[in-house]
Image (tube, rainbow, N blue to C red; front, side, top):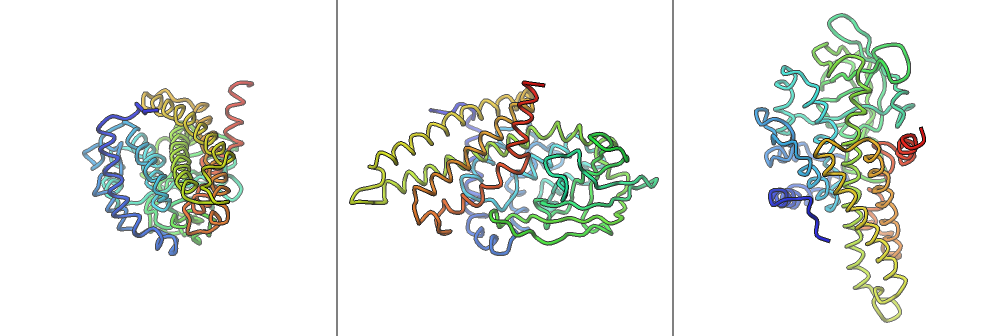
Length: 380
């Protein structure tokens, strides 16, 4: 079915993204996977191509558009290319809203020009060794010391953790537990007491640096408080819908891409003297996956349109996230099976998709958490 989500301007942007991927990303991706991190220069190249800060005002070097469809195009094309190392989605769709919506004018002048040029790479530090999907369990503390906060704590599984120059840290600014008393502090590269741990060894997304972060008596000036004190949980809840939608959009595109790869494979690969595509079981498998992908795409396009109008709620974002990521996991697994022994070989695209995509049902809120959000909305 023909999609009506995008206009000519979005498709022109899609060609820009594809050209960028072909020239600046894919020729280097294997090397990045071996070294566990992308080159900083590719971030600056992305900035020159206008791929960073799509929603940032033009006066700071951004794209000046709040049309989320451009971000959706970016997510789709990176997913289809299997380019998991360069986390532009994290930078634009997850960290970006905190800076554009909460930063003061002074903070915007200080951070946004570098953010849009690729000179400043960003990360957000929520997850801790004992607090993942349950943000109320965060234990990092920021104690008021007059003109600064004294930040202490440990964060883990932080994407862009090695490269990040600016980290939005969620910390507790009151001793009470629960959702109250959390604030957002911006920690910058070079602050005394801010240390990075090892670049974590993951089963997939090898080129995407993921690190442990340690904060020991880090003096964070009051000028680096993002938004109001003790309101972080509210801000996090407001922005999680876009984060989850971004993950869902990438998941659906990844599923569609690997299905296309598998369709080509079963047409060419022979067994028992004829192409696999001639076997009824294979045709049924392909038919089922294609139908599931088409139905998912229709729902996600609706969600993107709703989000563009500011009407996508947390419940439907959770539906999109759990359904699309579970679809991706299911489709990639079935496609690997159809590749037979070759699917287990890392030189085949389906093997990399299997490893890279497994995290999708975990980060941004696990499938189980998504179902809990949906269930509570219906049952109280």
